[in-house]
Image 1 (cartoon, helix red, strand yellow):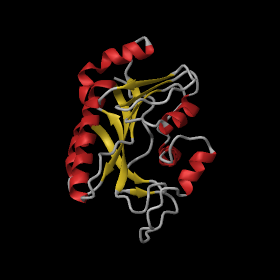
Image 2 (cartoon, rainbow, N blue to C red):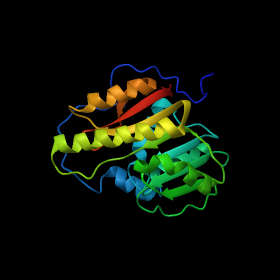
Image 3 (cartoon, rainbow, N blue to C red):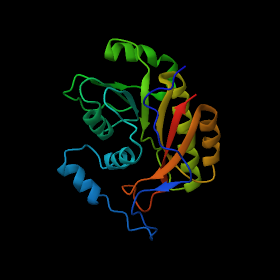
Length: 225
């Protein structure tokens, strides 16, 4: 079978940091930081969109006409940015346990659903977009409810991402790509093992828009086997 045309050309190696990123002491946590303010100015629903924008600039995961599924999508800033690239001929499906405020564009569909119920999700796709489809790309900005204990939060993050891998087993096209966010610490190797079973390669990337105090990173998985 031919490789999906959307597989990124990037050749992964060691962990990458965003251009111009410098190691520095964590700054005090500020809810209303520069990215929060910028998101308000540019009418994005959340500051997290700038993480996706940086990733897109580095890896070009999103292309016009794609079918994209955004998991844990609320409040929906990833969807806003993805729509700019796929234009009117692609399809976006956003999933979250929380209702997502509606979009005016007809090719954006939102579903209140749990990824833990992925075996029954096919009928929800049929209902939302009127036909069954697999996706060229699955994105996720998922994070567990945090406890303040790094080991507990990191383990929960890994477990959630393994569930997204299982979801992508069913709903991502062969040679499709997957974007994950994970809290990286000791249990990260468990997630790596599951990724390697399923994807041709992967790389890690930490955008500048990640907060200094956060131990989150993004994992870009290339070429579903």
